[in-house]
Image (tube, rainbow, N blue to C red; front, side):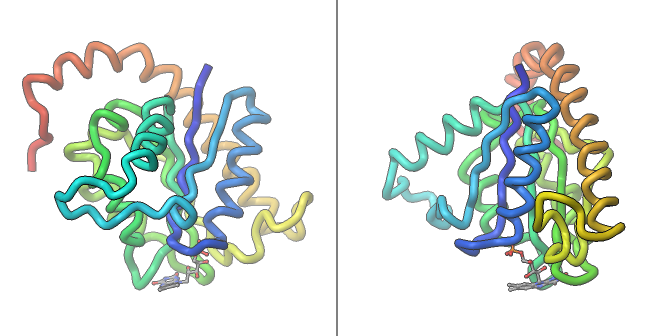
Length: 198
Ligand SMILES: Cc1cc2nc3c(=O)[nH]c(=O)nc-3n(C[C@H](O)[C@H](O)[C@H](O)COP(=O)(O)O)c2cc1C
């Protein structure tokens, strides 16, 4: 069965990213797959420096969560036109061993009208060594404070975003099944070329 890990990439302890991640987890479960949330605001990784992790148990727990996932949703806020350092840091601590040839749905969020830079930034190069497979479909949730804040949609925009999330999650689960079939051979081939070209 598909195991979707929804990563809330805000560094804030209480975040809009987590609100959206919890909603997505619920919707994935409604679609018949298993889902979990990794909140980078609560699971604070040290900034990668080449030194061993000060809390190896924390690293092992996160590695196990990433290893166990067959696909991902990255819920990423736009901060100063960028993705927050926490998601880059996660992609530095971990890599192909956890992400290669697994599908990932990008979901940018913004309190205002932003979000596109996050999509462009992560699509731009973060797949290179991780070999994560970003779906062609992505989500940009604008005015996120007005979205999925209650059990039922509060207006047309909230309703649209909920429909759009379900649409994209159905794609994610289809890719999850499809890529599972090619992943073992793709991982084997990768042994000869451990880094992507740049
Ligand atoms: C440091 C910082 C920088 C921000 N820069 C942007 C920005 O460039 N574009 C934008 O649309 N929103 C920006 N925002 C607003 C965020 O989109 C908004 O706070 C969002 O809800 C943050 O998500 P979070 O609650 O998951 O951290 C910024 C917020 C913070 C804290």
